[in-house]
Image (tube, rainbow, N blue to C red; front, top):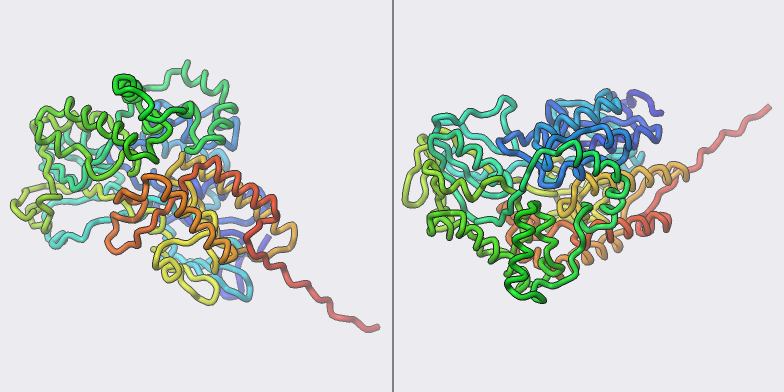
Length: 552
């Protein structure tokens, strides 16, 4: 164990974990299990990461709850009972708190500790982390568990400071909630959070204006309570389900891999397949209808047109239906949303869809929003405008590696990593589900466990051999970045203006960030590299200790 305080007064640890969500908690559990002195620094006043901050109405996971959960402890997964097929935010947060209490994690978590800087010292091979409140800690290993969707983006509309009503971002929702009863509400954004929140806000609001720039594809969740029988049946074969998930691209079990192209079937047969998927619910299920939906434009268009036809059938006003039909991207190339009555909401008399692609928002006024042609009087504005995804939280901190070089400088033209786990020039800094890994294109909990297990095994290997520093070789990092790009370019993903390429952040370099060959293939790559003594990583051994000669 290390001393409590370094000579300069910084708290001395073996490992520092930044972020207290699913990734940070599991990292703390695993690293503590190695005998390391570890602390988690969490910006929020509570644990939970994205599930702490995203309390907006309708917030819900789009991976089934029995899959979106830790697999590392058999008793935990057998004893915890999920109430619904797709868990609501409150239930996920309740689960996270249960895990923290069950494994006594809270004693090593520092809340209200937003990290402002992390600096590597070449001479000692140590990281010093400082919080906004001035707390300093030093450790050999720094683990970034800051999340992929954790830096909210509020558009810089002129005049926001003059708005006399209240405004909220879905990613920073008030703990006490928001009362929309009798209010004129405007929701800006129709991505996942907007699609989840809009139906529930519409039920409360006097009138709801939905300001849409880009229509998005969404499929029904078909959510339902989990019966005791369904729960018991799944848990009876939990080990088998988990093992199956490890062998799938998305890290999710229960979906037979498709074997046919959408173009191999006649239109009636194809429509029957899509209809069954639509009525089953779930985005992975829908994308698993055929084996080429994400690589073949013509195949993908058959799925696009099926959903557009559904919108025509649900939304009564043909002009509104037309605006809600996506026509600028292929289905699945942006995050395919799950909804509970989203399209039906636009049949309500108190809901108005505003097309801000043809008539952009110009400013926020004291009374509401003004587009190029009209002012909309509002009492409350909800920004469902997403996040600076995958890199935002990391670059929000002043991270400096070897020679004082900043991460912002290194990633000025886009993120560069080896395996999405580390970046050259920043020794001993691990990134959980970083850019260049499957991360957001998978069940995040599966990806988190895979990364944390790899990191823990790596540290155990290094410590056993007296290694004090590890970082990727530049050549290997370059090869990995090229490989990630080649894989992405073999799909339809990069064709969309999505947050996967940073398109929602003005000025952000357009780089496709996730690795989309699949978690199963990626896992094997990581395991093979570890088996080859961490091939592609430069290792620095501890200098031998010299013992002064003594005379008698």
